[in-house]
Length: 298
Image (spheres, rainbow, N blue to C red):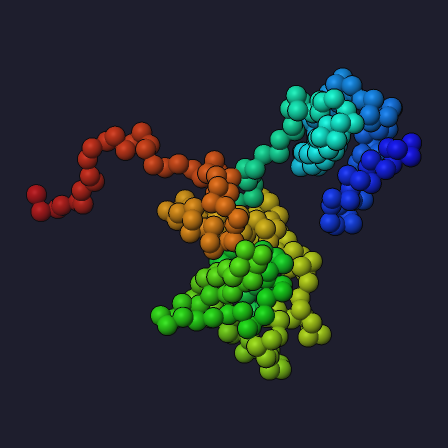
């Protein structure tokens, strides 16, 4: 048992985050409990049964597919380590299919224009702060975390009058454009504040002068969806999905959307393509005629 503990600790020592180490250790323990034997004695049947059980739980909606995918990846990495260090002859998980979480964005996450119109009409009746933050999230594609942590000193205006936000990421600086109408909303909101705000101040403040919470923003959007009588209660992340889907549908390139939303790769645009109703190359496009205006002169 001590040997196994040393093996696990040696494997975990390669991880930087303590939380990752705890998660790995817990999930490896669950695997050992499932196969009811030492992990060094695991057979290919044990490994197949473990993954089959994960897939069954997913089908029964007892486990999220993303969690199943994560558990597979963890156990696969551990058994790779065992093989590389000759604790076992072979990593059986190499021959077992991985539970794959779909990367597609569900249609229910994309707000149609008709519903957007209803939603925005309701948001207009709310206070300027709540209206402005949700419109900024939608029109600029910000994450909720980016929006609530936004400071006035992140806004920039170029020589042609374009407004943008600078974000500093691990990959460097990212510039996100702000719609001019949304910028006007932000200025009206700023002017409505009882006290002056400095460039270093958070943009969206609560009644105590502290930055607004993500929980509050989610609650406001949920309330607006109910008042607009929408079929779904959308989240701030859904506003971001909606921007991506509709801009791609209207001709924006994957590169443009990647830059605006801060994606790591243009390939993420593929997640939205199946949600877009393809009006191009439709059957009616083969009708070779133009509608004419009524001419009453004849």
